[in-house]
Length: 151
View 1 (cartoon, one colour):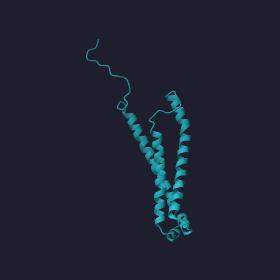
View 2 (cartoon, one colour):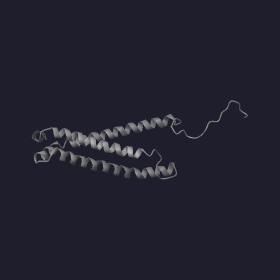
View 3 (spheres, one colour):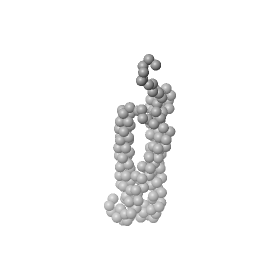
View 4 (cartoon, one colour):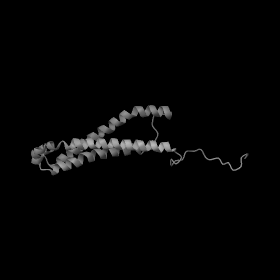
């Protein structure tokens, strides 16, 4: 009342994140770019590892394995890779996240959107599937005798 024209704004945090300082958005963008680069390098490694198995795939076809059986085998391997990546990532990040949560938030579980963990799991599973399935399909298009000669 003693200061005409002065208005008091609410101090509650905006749910849309519009009140977040620019540094938060810059940090988030940097983290997303780094994680994208990491995902790209892992995908590249999985594609290269699968492509190097061309002679193995050709030998399996020559002994009578059908392309459907080979794709099923590779899908199972992709499932094992994705499960191992998710379990090890969760176990390796649990302690640091719990310590950071306890130190910054006062409780050992991290804060954040609930959809983030399933989104990460889906991204890992999709990356593992695609980086195994596509080179396998490419290797299956090559005649088995040519695949053995090339390897």
